[in-house]
Image 1 (tube, rainbow, N blue to C red):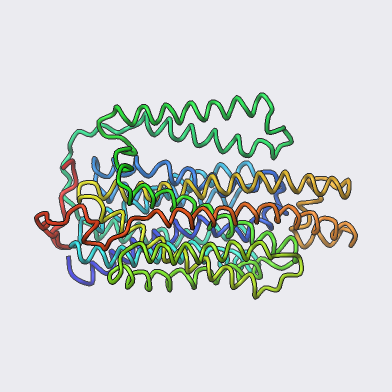
Image 2: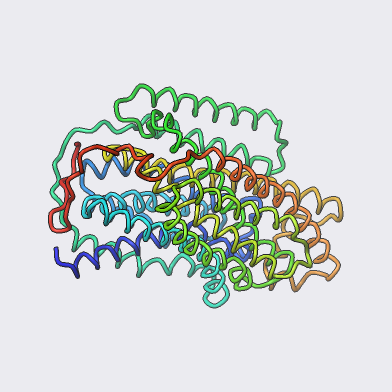
Length: 511
């Protein structure tokens, strides 16, 4: 493979990853408009959680399929499912349809990140992989946090459906580049895919999310139905843990978490994922629903997070080399904590400058911590475990975000119902009208004020929980092990791993 072909291949991988990451958050600033058009405000969080859930729980399965059938067909199939979900999401006529099609999008997106990093591992030496890992992490981070700004621009100027349709040309280009340029020698070996583990995990997380959101439809948290679903979720998750200790190739090897680096990084990563997705999901709602801004306004406010992320990643890389992981982790956690506490100061009259400041701080913190966690986790295991360890890191970060958004959304809906009900007899249809400028114009000024105030009060409850998550990230960071990269490396003193080349990729198959 020539240098130009390698560059194009890396570009194709980067493009696919950017799309998958972008669609995690791009709908954030479009959602108020979507709710205004389709209704279904009680299903708000499911549009985010459906994508996050399916894109996360499919990661381990795709990793196994890539070993069986090769990286190229799995990557291309994943992109194809993602694009099909995008087309159907853009054509959705109800919130239920949108949630189903977003789940399909997520099933496809679940292939992109793990297979991308696997291909990078096949083609490049350890030193090259380290540099590219940072680059791809930056692409994922910037794409995730730039999503709200892009979503706002597209929604305001082209309509919310184009938030999904715009994926088509870029996704097709990514799949075409991989299909044409990637060559691999596939050794078909027998693998035992952990279907039962994947089934029990997906079932448990799905039921847990349903339980968290059941109150959105007016049922009490302690209702018999909700308690039954929660019990089933816990039983399914317990079954998952039991299965993982008995299968030969578990979807999530529990032994990894005996390593303190992986255990602390996974916990802090899940908490920081919940913090990030909580902020990027609900700050746009504040700007549009409380301050009556446009989708573009909401995206512009959230965009500074994407500026802080790459800066934090770059600085963290230098700190890791000179001082070890822990300093970078603690600085990042401190920034996240500062941003979370500033969120408590947000009121109806808060200037946009304060929102920008807190989002820059959170972006810096995420840049510091995400880079340090990825490098530390990959360095804490041998080559044979690096893929599953990296996938586990992504799994916990995204599951943390998925459960966090679901829980925060449930709190928001319940709190808004309570505050709006205490102030007026306005129903859910009128509340969703607040988020659609055309429908809002038909409301009386007094009703708009009631809706704004009640939404702001509900968001205050959400802010307290997000700040609490930031505190937990800060606490977890203090348990991160001391040491530099070579001191915490699982391969310290081991024989050097033979470096693959772009021209001679590793064969795909069971090692």
